[in-house]
Image (cartoon, rainbow, N blue to C red):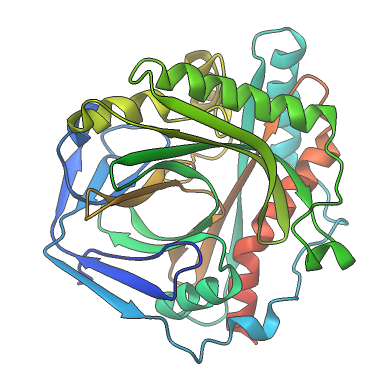
Length: 349
């Protein structure tokens, strides 16, 4: 039987960390107060989807292998604008969008799952190393626990980080895809639409209001264009101090889920999502990462997939506003799914 483990590589790092140990199940965000280990948390907490903490019985830092073949296809693409929205997505979009038009929500996030059947069994470790090679800017993690199953993520979104007593979180929203010559840069030539700017501002305002409940010492910088794989987003950075760092779980409970993966008003959007989305998100749009293991690096679980024998379940979502157009939102999710599809494509070569 496979033992619980987590591999993770921080952005731009040339080493990765392996954490192994017994798991601990938690059923409230406040139970994370004072806990140390690798955390795997779902979008929605429930009995069958607990927060899982891998205790750090063994923590080892290792160099990344230099012979990974991910770079060999770094310019390849699995993205197609010819794929029509699925029936389930069409139904969900109409349902979600009607609530925006009625003024029920300022923003709401619609997610979906795409299944990729593989002819041969895959080596999750090889996928992790290829993801590290393909996406040097992103947080890469491969995690297995009996409670969550096996997940691979390559995500740009920080939920909560700490180093040398200074904490950080970000507001990340708005999406555009880089094409052709734009792939040589950081998206500096792109012009953002009013819809994307508004979406990012909603997320940033929410985070500022959360932080005000825990500290009067925080600073916001941005927004700026930030690249993640073949996509760019609008990003604002928040740095802050915490008078009491023993109550991290309380802060996490306020931040998660952010409007970047849920919506506003938060409670109403969250309830609508869990009762109306066709596919359960499970651990997609939750968060994962090391908590109080010398430092803290918790990332929102975006651009991720659940790996099973012969099949990978890929997840992606996008923020909807009143003026959102279904075909454009579908293509945004297709572009986000490409992050994981490229990892699988390297395996198929």
